[in-house]
Image (cartoon, rainbow, N blue to C red; front, side, top):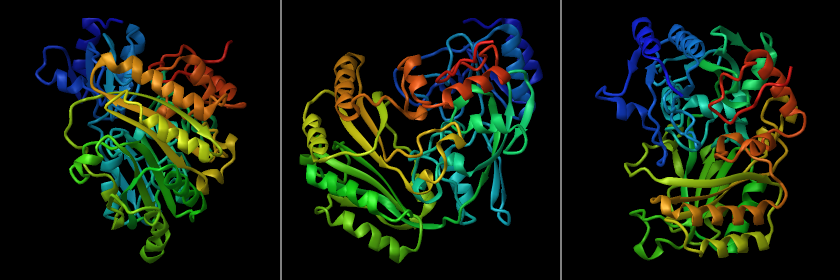
Length: 457
């Protein structure tokens, strides 16, 4: 793709925000994204300041035929938050949070990260659940669903979304909610960035001040992993867990002899009374002598510490759902982790259920409410030469775990082709999303994403 000089000059003269181009001193910093292996060079990066800036960028890109990528946190696994030769609409300078503590709602600009938003709400003892990484943009995670630390107590992020301001492909700013343009509101709750640029979100706020939470490190045996998952499934809804069965990274608080050996690195959050929380997490700590125990009463924003300084790494993964895992599955996972194919290998197990399952599958664009466990198989490596072995390992482990079940969660989907995107939206969800796409974006202008093509006709 190429973007004309006249288009860029017109944007420079019309935006309240900035337009950054090759040759500008901060161009390389502005175009960088989270993951390694993505080195795209956009013709222009529009750091928008307000709704009108968003509209103008969308109109300029559409009229000039330029490819448009939308960026906030830059965590896209496929690199779709950047463009080679196109325009990046960068929301990061839109940072306002307007909290209505009495009504328990907040309007939040689409340029915020999960950590920034959570810190702003923490001062009021309130929260909205996002994912497990603070530097992820609230836009990307919300539009895909949002599965994180509060999923069993308060549901997905989209279950707490009550309205949004969306700039559509026609350059129109629309306020959408359950009464006003309900089809578009349904689609943006799980359908990803296919339907427009969300300038701001209105969230329902939950009373989350102090939690019992943090990381728990356990030695990994098949018995420990199976016991952890049984406890997680039987736990009260206040308790959400993410169990990473993995090769131990070189963390300073882990003895050197454990580096590279199988461990369970678990995130645990109990959103409720501290004494009840201590009782709920005690059985997890009793599964084996912890290698490190950081689970304690903390403020909820402490679950999002700053990302550590580290070189950009390459990653490859596979995501899907299962409804049960048995002793043989856990033993097989541990055995496969012994195969040295990457700097780090992991099988992440997210126990679902609770509030997230109390919503019908067809109520939103996210259609996996009845599934019990989300599984992510992943590798992290430094050199592109390691990619073939890492990818082969991921695929073989995923095939063993999932069998013929090809469903997935769009926010963890890599560059896996249109058929995998189709499998992300089971039942009638895919057809309904395509119909709504046809109404709001018939030319598939918003295609830098896990793309849902408009319905024919």
